[in-house]
Image 1 (cartoon, rainbow, N blue to C red):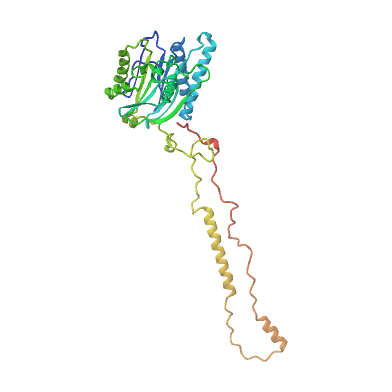
Image 2 (cartoon, helix red, strand yellow):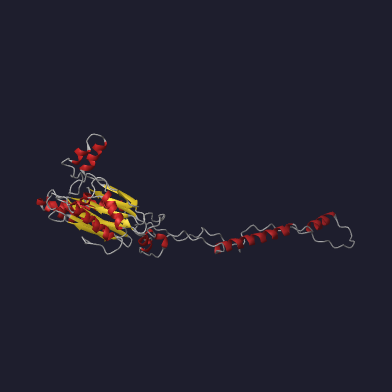
Length: 395
């Protein structure tokens, strides 16, 4: 959505004012990247340069288009930096095709906000401020790429008086911008927005309210309470009431991460809850890059065919051993009392004695026919090919 005058939800509002300028060179942009992820972009075309509005429009559109098509599976900070480079390249192409636009540029501040948990990442180039308003206090969380910030460091070091810094002719010059060339300074960071806290993206026209401490901005936000449309309107009205000569364009985007939104934001449903993007997952052994867990190999039950065959073989071997022992330790047969016989000759008696000795057969050492052969190897569970594991985009 490009340049709407107000919001349609109680937790978001954005507004713009031309001020004393001839045209609006600021661009405000917001879009739903997914059910739970929002993108907010503010670009301030460089005042005093030709085609400032063209620069901010070109950069914002190229930035948002890249996020929309490349956010899946990418870390938010990496996606934001890549989108910034695409925006810078888009300006370079326009400048190459139209030499009369040489020198145009824009600031850019963009935020990706994950609604359920308030996690956010931002990228910032230039002097457009990004604030967090919480418990009545306003704090700037992005760097100020303006010469005024460098002058403030000189004041803090005692090398320049505050009066000299306030009157310096280059005070409002910016030290980094998107101009289709190398970007000197880029601020990329992440954080968590507490419930009911506000994110405020603005162009530098808002700093008319209080160049020193932003105290007036915090007071106005506190007075309006939860009415975000009232907040954005009050900010623009206060800037206009100052009546500053040559007042710059002023644009504001105000976002609340509310408890209601955190508990009712739709969540994409998937068949397997263990693959939700919000969960930390171990990679599969078969496909380390998929991020998908494959089930562990199925264990064969103890009552498997191999187990039964093994037990049967052991039983047969035990029975055979008992039979052999029984044959070895069998008691000798009882002798019947013989009637008196005439004495035999010595050779005959010896032969008769030899014939009466029973010889036990040798134990059978050949494999029993009923003993099952052990399997060559334990059966294994078939392994899925790597291509069978489908991957889900990370978020």
